Length: 283
Ligand SMILES: NC(=O)c1ccc[n+]([C@@H]2O[C@H](COP(=O)([O-])OP(=O)(O)OC[C@H]3O[C@@H](n4cnc5c(N)ncnc54)[C@H](O)[C@@H]3O)[C@@H](O)[C@H]2O)c1
Image (cartoon, rainbow, N blue to C red; front, side, top):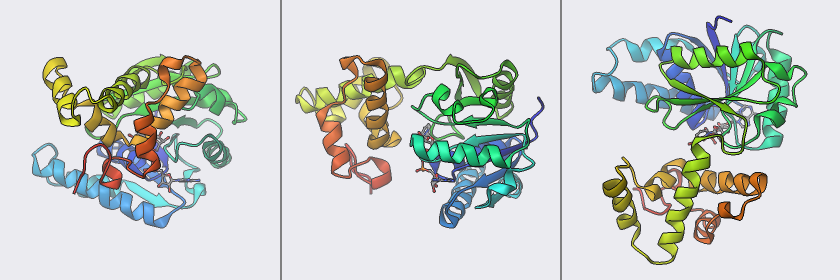
């Protein structure tokens, strides 16, 4: 199936990043959110991000305005009626996503593909919320979307071959490098990454080294571009905790139990960069 227009539902960190990357690649984008404030913040974020890329010479002078012109923002799901694919990037909650997916399915053409950017919810379980589950596929982008190359293309039990192939081809046209993944808790990257981040919290709590030294250790000794604790702050400590809880519940192995320190920081509202304080402080 040839994709020309893309709907994005949820105009937060990921939705605005996906909209930006798609518009910059020449696609017409319709971005939906329940909140007008979120939509105007998303437009401002897209503009600021494209301006940064322009000032570094990574896009040409006309690119920011041209990309923004391709993004239509609305609170009306009816605006999705003509798009070829919708990528859901709203809040990480199975009930919320279930409601949103049913609204999307009621709004789009019968042949439109529906994708989700969930980081931890089962693609098979979300597909089961739809009348036509074969049209549903996972497209897991990484944060920040304009900079990160990977997209995990996740097939639920019901995902059709054409829909999975179309999602993969779309990721490539947006300039990303997709990998194919079978639905499984945490998919590939978070299944491997989150236990490492969790272990860094155990090491910190045991006083083996300071936070800065743990991060330096992994940067200098394992050649990681960012330390695990700074990465946790970037992702959001609440997001890390919820992914670990899903891994523990769905895989049933105690090796995925979240470190108590991570739970404490989340309970204290220290969520990372977005709250200006996580493991480290940001001002
Ligand atoms: N933040 C990350 O690093 C990251 C990385 C990969 C995937 N994800 C996944 O992407 C999704 C979005 O995450 P985020 O960090 O952008 O969240 P966010 O909180 O920044 O944004 C979520 C947006 O969804 C909107 N929303 C809520 N209910 C809605 C509805 N009914 N209709 C339309 N919009 C609605 C909210 O108003 C908000 O603007 C989640 O599923 C998350 O797991 C996040």
